[in-house]
Image (cartoon, rainbow, N blue to C red; front, side, top):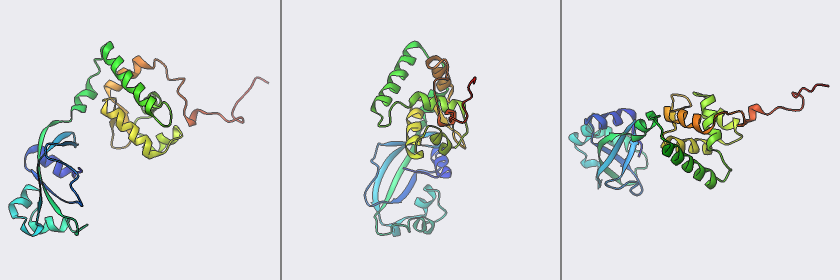
Length: 214
């Protein structure tokens, strides 16, 4: 479930505890949770409602000035039912603390290595985890389109793979592009002592660029 930054901050500080959505069918369930702006948000209630019965208090709890503002926001897909969703913040995104933890034991390194090996084994485009980590380490803050192209990949699948690394606490998103987290830096230092063997399309020389001794 997506929240605007303002609403996510409101849920985090307790000033917002409702949201309204028009869906053909419910996309969430009570008790489920999701990440928004560095916080874990739990769904506490879910019910279909008549948008004409939304009250001023409901609107305020959802960060709107009036019920009419809520209804205006729900004007898209007006044929779908309206859901009233209760929300509460249950803590910080655990990946934040994980990313900062670079005190890796040998067991930690072994566990991360096994998880990455599993991702590589399941990948339809071959092993990718170390190459992506090395590339992000070399080029922090570079847009994903350029990073994907450097590995000869499409942007959509590349971003999906970086998200998998982020869940392990190895990378973090920047305003533009990505960076290795402290945990990622330490793992890569111990896993890949040198990155000379990781080649991107930018590293490939053409025949005209290769100089010989002749």
